[in-house]
Length: 195
Image (cartoon, rainbow, N blue to C red; front, top):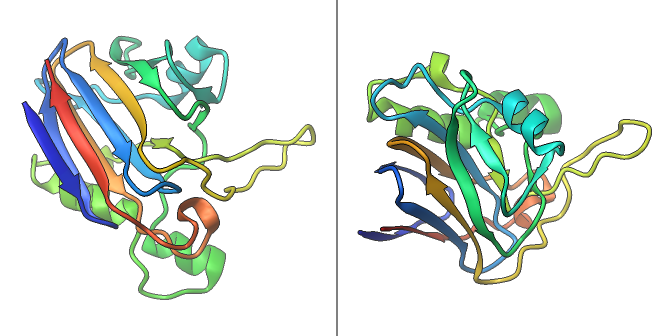
């Protein structure tokens, strides 16, 4: 149905129909992919991290876990995962957070990519919520400490999600160069939609 290469640091959006599978491939390895999704017919219904985490019983998502909406309806199910343990708590990077955390000015991030992608569908800043980070690790220690870790996904690593409703998928192929989530070197990904 669709097979596209998303350049390093770029956004991507698309409608995934109920029953279709969205496959994301980390082509070169060590690349984080920020992900949001919305009910295509009613975007006020959107991905909800707390519902997803509570249902999974884990802050790390993998095969069999469901991405739930803010009204507790299934949006996507992870049907295949070659990575294991995708992050739900790190959120998206942004120009303001890069300034706050790293002292780097004018360094756009995934938030800006989300705004670009959402704008194509009449959505905007109010529609950005805490997102899933595919192929990204944010380990949490026993004392509650957490930090973005070095990307470890191998080249060709894939995650596949089956749509449980007609959904708008919004991706930021993370442009971050100030922390190790992309090994300081953003690279392209492949996005496919199949029946």
